[in-house]
Image (cartoon, helix red, strand yellow):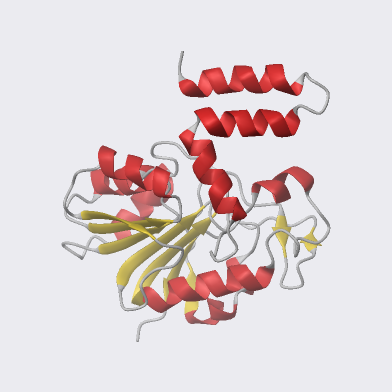
Length: 244
């Protein structure tokens, strides 16, 4: 029986006890290092933490990855940043398509990064523990997939998201990505609760006509005033930065 299955069974048993929810979480953190790592991150106040629930899977966005490869075809060894790389699935998916690329994955979760390094020994892959890219670096493409969102927003769908994930924090995070993306480079953002078109840096970008057919448009959206935008879809995913 795996640690995760055992944890899920214990969770169900303890939650059946009146008032057992907090106890269940404490017990699960004792037996599951991933849960301990996530709990420690959520307790910190010194991080630019966006999505605290790092669920992901292999080759999650194949159409987007393929589209990006076509746009980077002229570069023999493009430099790519996977922002919020979790256990490195995105880095490995890109590596399969661009074997000579220099790919950097950054994340605030040390436990997840250890798993990423174990699964990816390629010397052209780097995994860095950080909540923002090194401002001295420059990349040809930056991906932030399922980063600028929050599971609590998905669950509760509040009218105002400021108490959970304010627009200003997301705008500042995207500005940090913009700072390390070369002129003419490519920015990929999807599965976010905010529209890139609303960001202060958006005026320096052109949205590509590319649309993913293997994933639905984003619909749980919030504006610069942190208020929920109802009845709107947003399917822009890939953006090109204006040449210098």
